[in-house]
Length: 131
Image 1 (cartoon, helix red, strand yellow):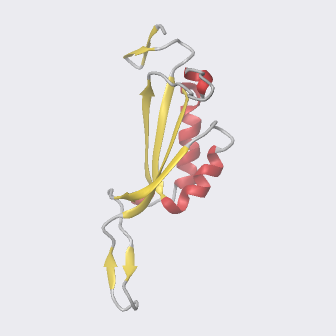
Image 2 (cartoon, rainbow, N blue to C red):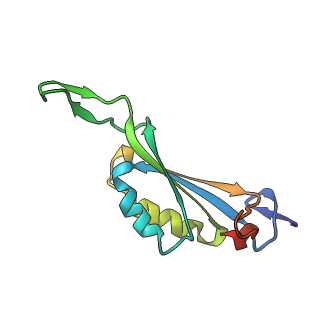
């Protein structure tokens, strides 16, 4: 791999092999909408479901017989993760944003980070070819 510069960062990469990891933390009820939007754009993705607590409102839950209501400590969230070529980061981020958007504070976040290398274990392909 060669050395290249992107947005002021020195990266260990070939010019055509700048890869990014996109992680979107979204409401779990938006998984189907977001994955449907991604299917035509990316080669694959991983979904991890769990609980999270951010700046958004937490759910108001009815208790045993529905007579009392409590505020949940955590919201049900999903993290959708994918690795893509730098050239489609904006397209993927916009697809996630549009599919997950409700206008509320608890819609989620999208994080993009640099990936130094990728190895597909089964095919032994590396970097962009592994995607």
